[in-house]
Length: 324
Picture (tube, rainbow, N blue to C red):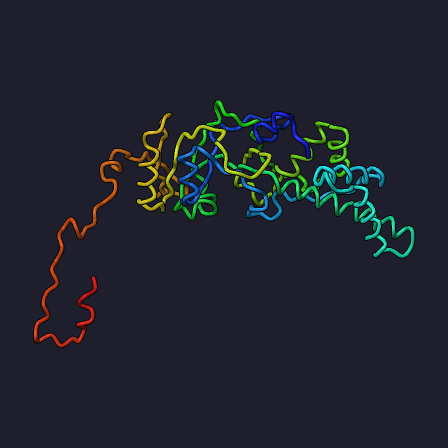
């Protein structure tokens, strides 16, 4: 698939129309070395759809609504884009040969040949979607399911990004009521005629359509030309620590991020005592900085000398005397 000049420079995919995103978007994260690296570098990771937990996400099917000659042109175009040095005509010959393996008369041969064209076009389409990068963001910080699924069962954190003055080409809202299939006619109009409306339909179905069961995520996405860690297109405005987040994790992040500019707000997330909702309260950063890394209790309160074993001790555990 081809991209505009600005897409090539930025690595992000533009769209033709946009709806305004919320003022803030959220990324739920588990704590690990990659998170610390991204916080220190003001970066974020655009993941390949191959790594998604939903195996149907960004894995569209296709509907063959093209006449055979146009389907052949589409396959040639996609094949040349994927493998510029290989012979697209040979690929068509391979399709015809494979069709003969499943046909016994001219009618069956045509059906089998169209099926071969469809399968190879779908395979090239899936190669294309798998090669792209997707930054997935949520609409709020207070979804218990999101904390459970994406933030290590409430032991991780949630990053809040401000969408004001962002540098993303587009921030796209995911739909949960759209079909999973792409018409080959739309794919052909985009690839062969540069039709922007057809292009929009393909991208919406390929990257922005999920099953209704995922609607609780209220997801927005930024699409990139490739999967990679890259500079975040938004300002980080707040960090939320999960209700089960270990104090050591909070200390490490607070000490790393407390003096960045512009200032980042930090909140503890707590379970409500009156409902199933989550609440937040501001983190006392000064207290964490003052307490900081704790000294060993053994060193603070002094070492205790090993007592000599009395002659009356018959436990027979002399071997353990040398162990702490």
